[in-house]
Amino acid sequence: MATLQEVMAQLEAAGTAQNRKVYTRHGAAEPMFGVSYKELGRIGKPLRTDHDLAAKLWESGNHDALVLALRVADASAMTKTLARRWLRDVDNYVLAEGLGGLLSQSPVARDLSDDWRDSPSEWPASVGWFIVTCTAEQADVWSAPELRDLVGQIEAEITDRPNRVRHEMNGALIAIALRDGNLRRSVVAAAERIGPVQVDHGQTGCKTPDIAPYVERTLAHRATMAARQADKAKARSKR
Image (tube, rainbow, N blue to C red; front, side, top):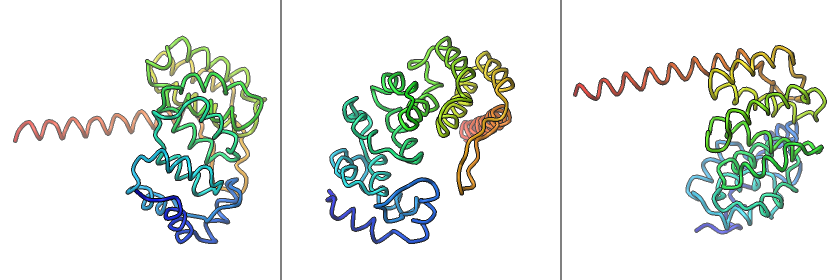
């Protein structure tokens, strides 16, 4: 198994000044090496799931190490206590969505989303809503009436929530719309009343998507992929 020192040395060797500039524009702060996502994938792949290493990487405080920690951590081992401890170090949207994505696979996903969505602070609320985005289509996590209530809450609050929370609420609406046709109609109607969601993405090319067109594109893509899979299955059955 790789040691913390070995992995940190790999991260340092893979970092570049240009990536550090780019990541700074996305809110990341020093210390960081500036490791590309391609290189993070290369370094992380042989590590597989290593929760002990993930904890050590997180404790390092280095941005690249934190991102890698979220990739190799064991979601099933994430407790509320550990999640809250890691949340204290989240200071940008990359880490917020990374932590939210990890926790969405954990046994405490729903509890943490419930605990954090209404926080007045940007990052806890962002993580809470991103968990919704990751889990909205899971019937064992959310009932349709619960999601409909969230649509109403988002419509009522989104304009006044902190910057990045607005982006994550917007994403949650998209995910809820993909759950089923009834919820989709509720989301589209709410989106029309909300209008364009204003989010400051700073000096980046990132954008907050318009809900209805994004949902339609996603549904069309899913239909295309399903048709391809059906064609492949049909071809295999004829062999």
